[in-house]
Length: 365
Ligand code: FNR
Image (cartoon, rainbow, N blue to C red; front, top):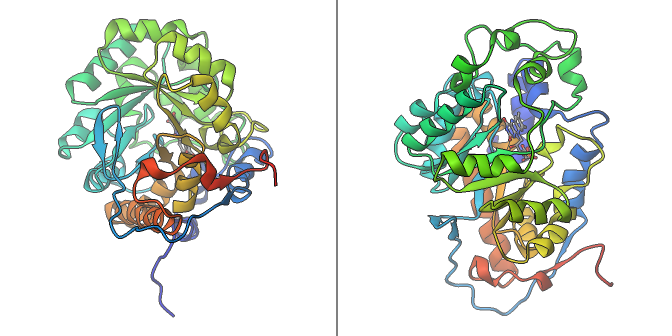
């Protein structure tokens, strides 16, 4: 039997075998009952594709533009923290693999690599994901460092005034190994908290003591005042917040439930995408993350109005199993599956994907 890996799910099983339980659980699990974690996958499965046949698909172009940057495909890498728990090269391997795939990597505020070291891996289009720490001057300095290091946008995560209730991390008494830190915020935060045992996970203790839970939409204007980079807001799940986001002046919206790690029983992102696309009315691009595991998932998200998608866990699993080569393979498998989905649906390019290419539960039979 061949042990060739043929889809991104297979990397999850291998990562589970390879990683210590505390680290695998940190990557894999969600909040509370993990209903949203399952729903992120199941909601995609409930959407049907309505393919068109007898279309000339001999020339397919999967490229797209995001904030003016040309990408090989509408599939990008979501910010995920602590990638050195998966592999000793962590974010540096992910950065190299993502550049090789000609797409965007978002570097997490919880990265174990500095943004300067990520920049040094070579050319690439990279965004920096931002948590606003209580030390506001320190945050402004990190944003300026990102700008100087050539990062192209700030992704402000809006769904995390505190950490979600992640029971596995609590049971495991999650702590960060002593040789790792959250490298970009080391100077402005007390990262020893991450290494100390607490009665909850050290991640939750760290967030409680270091993250500013008072932030509101006015922080978008504050960011505008300190950087000329475009600003995306991540974590929008309602049409109401999408309207406020546009009003606050963001350059793009990421529909996200943080991979079901924050509030449980929120809907799957794919279930609320259309509501948000309608509220935004084309004023800024809308992206989605959460549960994207197949090229057909990418196709479905684009049909419902997303300008592109981000993937989180599959990238980390590829990294855990095979470092940079694993991330390359994850991105290639998603790329190739999306190409097949396009062709078999009668589309030659991303713009050809229309709402009529999918059926959702809200549509008449
Ligand atoms: C995340 N996510 C995340 N988001 C963010 O804004 N900052 C962060 O530091 C992290 N860290 C993080 C760690 C891990 C291990 C995971 C799995 C996720 C959320 C992430 O950006 C994205 O929203 C989800 O991962 C998307 O869902 P999938 O693709 O994992 O299903």
